[in-house]
Image 1 (cartoon, rainbow, N blue to C red):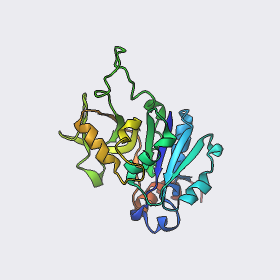
Image 2: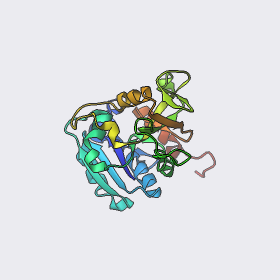
Image 3: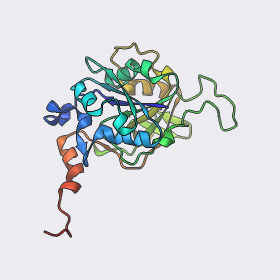
Image 4: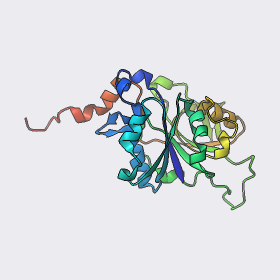
Length: 242
């Protein structure tokens, strides 16, 4: 199984930090955000990783290289202008192959996420071993999180039948998912497209599955949020000697 890390965003809300450093290379607790993902993927045996980039992209390639330092094999999908999340994935399909693949936003912090759990989420057979009809099987399996304060309305309602655009309560898409390549067949390489647009289309068709992830999850959007997350390391311990 291959994985893709989305690293092409400009990080406007993270300025001025992102004026000189791409957001995925900002450090959280001593390690660049994107490296947390690479190491966790490798830990799960997922070593073939594609990274797209645009803003200051060469810095990402220079920092990560071919991935051998992490036990991974990295390939890059550069974008002259960021193509949005869905467009970036479609543009990199030639590197991702014909099987389902994992996609994670490089700017979230999920240090304890177990990528082993992603490997069998899009099985082509039901619990009795019968093949799913192509128009009935899930096209994607995404991980949802409890609504953060800045997104209380959520994105999708979750039931035993999958994820839906209708219904309450809604949960927030956690920017982690497993996707079949055919989900992006309608997107022309180089086209701007949001992943959320495609997810909503397949939710309407009853082909979007998902589950709640209740582990540590942070979408780091501002310098203040980054500083808050790093504060425990910077602050002296109450019981430490002077």
